Image (cartoon, rainbow, N blue to C red; front, side):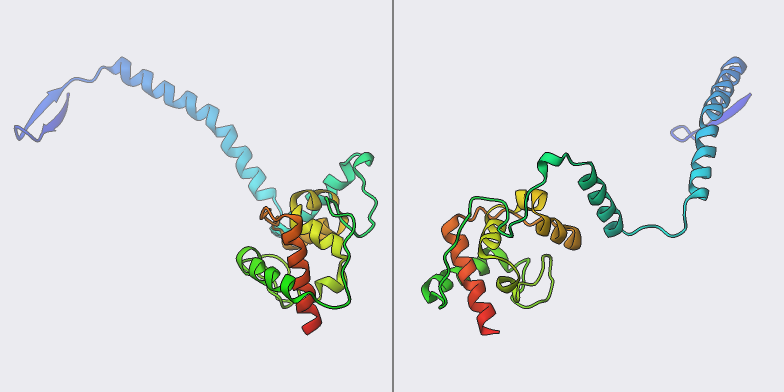
Length: 193
């Protein structure tokens, strides 16, 4: 006979436990252990066989990107003319900076871009933008500003940037006119330095 303590009446009360029920519960517990033991064993084996040197997230991402590029159909291959993918096919930039357009671009940059980009070569989230107008064609820059998702999927240079920085540039819903103002501001910054 087993006793339990009743806290309300402060007394011990006998209860009866059925031996058949105990035996049934013990058998159920053994059956569950038999099912769980192989899973536990295999998990331990996999853990013990894994390499001590784990790959960084960046290395894993780069390998996945390389595998995805190799598996991509040939029809998705885009000829790289340095202008990027998007609505901007041609941009006329003068030798001089349009100060009014650059001022508008500065305002846009501070509101939409400065959280992720510096005007120096310092990386925050995205790459630093010092010298970007010397490294990239104006059309490429405007297409990247207007159309960052498609650019990082199809443009070779944008793919490299995504693999390097591991962060997709956010689409800020910038139209062509505003992208042109941002381009002029970046040109102004590069000419000043």
